[in-house]
Length: 496
Ligand code: KIV
Ligand code: ZN
Image (cartoon, rainbow, N blue to C red; front, side, top):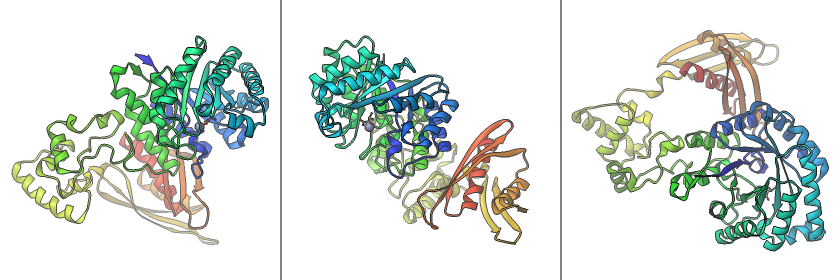
């Protein structure tokens, strides 16, 4: 199998999207999730662009061990100096420098000549090599760059020391055959013994994944991608699509280091932290990607999944819930769902439950696992701690007091406490119910947009038994969000 390196740019190209900005703590959480996912390179930011990006690269470098940490720069010495400084704690580091190479960029952006651009590119690569042996060069707008000139650029930067050369289709303009031919042209015309080519395809015409795969088929050995395909304008190439396309076609002979079972959870994490919902029909990670709702499809899938499924949902970390229970579902579909939930019932019991199920399905469009279990008087969520209610008295010159009700294993526990503020009072009340030696290590409240009607995001690190657990919640009430984030973290170790 030929190794394809996965370069994730969710935290750089993805994070450039308006409204998707993350704070340092959130970026570190995403970077740790990307490490679990098995990406080879994390592009952690564009450090000269903001102190926030700089700080995030420092913190990500400290928090992450295995993947190469990469920082983006323009072909400018100052950018490269800042990138090198931001990467000082990285165990393995890469500087990603580059410049526009299409005539549009050369004339209109730089007012330069083709020769001058090659000079600047070579100078930047040589300068970056002073700080690391791992230097990637990007030829911005390579998609619209004349192939013969692009080959001259690629040859020059490899001679200058670039070990990866990125061929971005910055505007998402190319057709797959055209992009593949570009990669092949470079492989055929440039001495590639000391470097590999990378794809970086945008989605403006909906061809990002097709172009990336065409690049791979023609010799590119690194793919630049983002989770859920987020990125500038229409987005970047979706990691999950490229990885699963390669994994689903093993006869093509390509493999990646991606632990595909992590895809679904990292996708959800990125979507919720970046406030970017995933469209329901999005390939691989959309909520309908593995859902069969028509009676004919359900029947086929229950007889043999291969009839309508090309990927096993469990391979991307989705619990088998491909049969969507609706009023059109038959007894077999309900029985199948009960078996998955570990419930065995007799034919007579199934008749009764099926009758109740149809009544419920008439009122509720989709029936979820909790609904099915409650039809049987069982609740799968029993073990988790849930906030039943929270009441807080706070203000100026009054005592801050909180009363809380937590439901644990179906039973309601209540407590009240006072504190030096409403959050302190509420957390103290929680601790009266959950009596464990736990302490809050990190606590961050952040508004998503602006305005007094905004939603607050809360991130919390809770230490218990020398392990730090991460909790998150978003709520228009920041005290409720704080308690929910605390409970989210607690649920991780009380489950364990
Ligand atoms: O799309 C692009 O060209 C880029 C480069 C900066 C790599 O994102
Ligand atoms: Zn890009």
